[in-house]
Image (cartoon, rainbow, N blue to C red):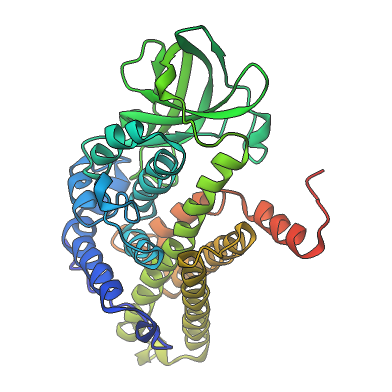
Amino acid sequence: MKPDLFEAPDYYAIDDLLTEEHKLVRNTARTWVKRNLSPIIEEYAQKSEFPTQLVKGLAEVGAFGSYIPTEYGGAGLDQISYGLIMQEMERGDSGIRSTASVQTSLVMGPIYNYGSEEQRKKYLPKLASGEWIGSFGLTEPNHGSNPGGMETKFKDMGDHYLLNGAKMWISNSPICDVAVVWAKNEEGRIHGLIVERGMEGFSTPETKNKWSLRASITGELIFDNVKVPKENLLPNKSGLGAPLKCLDHARYGISWGAIGAAMDCYDTALRYAKERTQFGKPIAQFQLQQKKLAEMITEITKAQLLVWRLGVLKNEGKATSAQISMAKRNNVDMALNIAREARQILGAMGISGDYSIMRHSMNLESVVTYEGTHDIHLLITGLDITGLNAFK
C-alpha cells in the first residue's frame, strides 16, 4: 500500500484569503482522506464497490450537511468551508465526493429550504449523522438535460398521494433510506416528495458495468403505485425552479471538488517527473514536460481564484445560477485536461492502478456530464450574457 504523499499546490498564496476556521476544516478533511480513503480507494474502484464503512467518518468530518444549521445536526459552516471539504473529498475520489454532495446539497438542502419544521427535525439529524443515506430523484430515462419534461407523476388520493414513474443515474439510490423525488401533480406542477425505504412499490436497482465513478453506488428509483403520506410533500416551494436551485448548490460543490482531482493529478505528475530519469536526467528537466506542468499549475490557480470569489458571493447571497454554471463547466474541463496531460507524463504507468490518475480521468468523464452537461452550462452562460434563449 503506497503512502499518500499529496502536497496541495498554492501558487498564489490563496491560503491568505482563508480564515483560520476554513483552514482547520480543510486540514481536518485532508487528514481524514489520507488516513481513511487513500489507502483503500484503488481497491474499491477496481472492484466497483462503494466503501460503506466510510459513511460514519464522512459525517464526522462535516461532509454531510456542512452548511446546515447545528440545530438540525449540520455543521453550521459557511459556503467556502463546504467547498473546501468537497475539494478534499474529490482529491480522494469523485465518487466519494458525489456521495457527500448529494447528501448535503440535494437531500438535506431541499428538506431544510423547502421542508416543514417537522420534516427538518425528522430527517436532517439522521442524514447529518450518516445514520440515513439519501438520494435525489430528478433525471429520468427520457429526460436528462430537459428535466421539465419529466414523466414521473403523483395523484391526490384523499389521504395520501399515489406516485408512479422512474428515475435513473441516481447516486446512492441502492443504499438510500430516503429519496427526495421530483414529480408532477395532476395539473403538471412539479413538487418534491420524500419517499422512504420500505414503502410498498418503491425499488432501487443498482446500475452495473460503469467505467466511471466505480467507487460510487449508482442506481434507479422506481415507483409502482407508491403510497406517499401527504406530510411527505415539501410544502415551501414548487415548480422546476425548486430542483434547479438544489442543483446550483451541488454544482457549486463540484466546482470546488474538481480542483481536488486536478491537484492530485498535478501532484502525482510533478513528483513522478522529478523521480523518473530518461536520457540521463529527470524528465522534469525536459522542456515539454515543464510546459505541461506549468500549464497545469496555472489552470489550477485560476480555478482556485474562481471558486474562492464564487464562495464569497455565495456567502453574501449574491451568487447567480449562471456564475455557478461557469465555475462548474470551467473547473471540470480544467481537471479533465490536467488528468489527461498528467497521464502522458507518467507514460504507461499512467494507466496503472498504482497511481490515481486514470481513476480520476474516468471519474471526471461522469462529472463533466452530471449536474448539467458541459454544453448545457455553456448555453446557460450564453443566455445570461445575450438574453437570448438557445434552449427554445
